Length: 104
Image 1 (cartoon, helix red, strand yellow):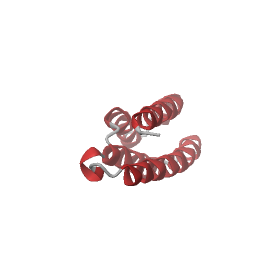
Image 2 (image 1 turned 45 degrees about the horizontal axis):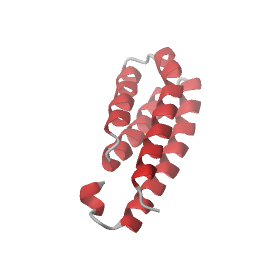
Image 3 (image 1 turned 180 degrees about the vertical axis):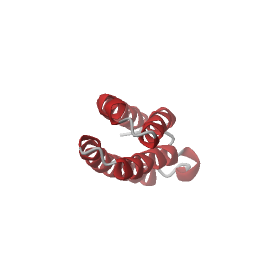
Image 4 (image 1 turned 90 degrees about the vertical axis):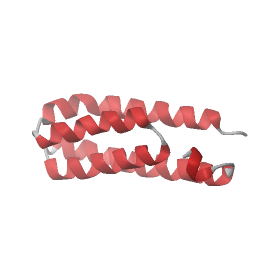
């Protein structure tokens, strides 16, 4: 994010806003996919969250969601269901940290 935005705070704020909006939309859909044991949708949505997290520099969330993708490949929906709340908590914390770094 730092390389992409450089010193353009407005652009940085917009990137974080878009990341927040899309990540929470994908997260809600991911919850449904996990409950329905829809492995294809789980992979797709988790990959979308992972890629967005990578683009914005949220490395811990990227890596954690990567684990969900691996579990989807072995269809371990029980594990994924247990980890859903943790993904949401990490996303919340990540966004709070980004916003603290933003001036005014």
